[in-house]
Length: 170
Ligand SMILES: [Zn+2]
Image (cartoon, rainbow, N blue to C red; front, side, top):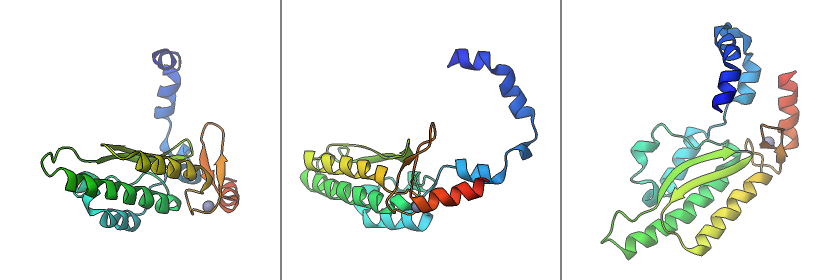
């Protein structure tokens, strides 16, 4: 990585010296990371009060970093963790530090990555993993059946959105 920057240092300067208008808005939109709509995110947080209670301040500005098409998957995983969180809470009021924390939730290489820490049952772990895998088959913009596309930039898109993006980029 260091070698890369040393080798291409000059090009980097050239990029930043160039006027910002050289990046077209359509390309910008295409490359922008999808973020879940605030309303949908709020619905998920409200549906899982135990899981997200402590994290609320941290989540004020952190949205689920995936498109609205994965709303159902993020909700389903959150519900599984909510059940785990409630179970833990009943089990050990004594050790309140032992709880489930949700970390980064994002799209990565065309797959939903739901970061969390804390002890969950094997059943919940397996179910969550299956839901993450299912994201590779659902357009992350609309949730319709899709597949992973692209070379170095993998995203899951349905045929309709691939066509839409192709036209937008022309
Ligand atoms: Zn779609």
